Length: 212
Image 1 (cartoon, rainbow, N blue to C red):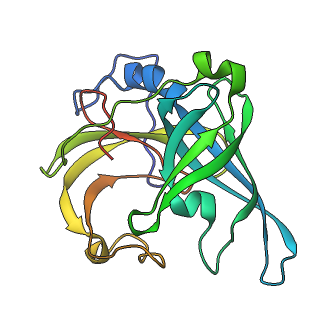
Image 2 (image 1 turned 180 degrees about the vertical axis):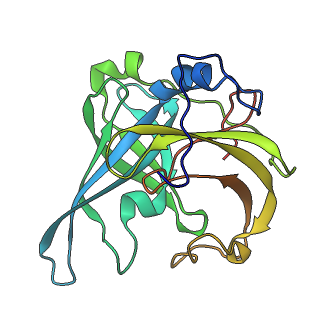
């Protein structure tokens, strides 16, 4: 497929980034979930059976739920493309599906915090990731993203680089800012091949912390 590079994980890791991709995937994949959005209402309130999806990553273990971060446009739709979904579902690494509820949104940053109803399985399934506490504002810094492609549920690994910061409105190769999104905010520049569905996926730096 044009734009894709494939690696035989049965062979020694030859990544130029110096990151052990297979080890990173095995360690972090249980913390990353597929998000499935089912149906939405049209302007007349009628339900439309349309599906789309994205990715989220776990950030906090609660008593009977797991909190995860994703993009707001994944869980609340894109104006003139799709609307607020009738149902949101999170699929974990184990293949189990759980209801997902949006509990906080920051439209200006295109971020959403979701609560996954993992119940009595929270202790074994919820594995929060660690997030870096500083900006990745240097160029040519190795980066690895892990997310699901399209709505397939099949996860991919994308290698690339963090390449400094840029104003959201100046990110020419990215989609135009969404309504309510802050076009003047600083965003990271990532140079890598990704696919629709990867929205909301974590991007890791060399030490295995989420940096984007």
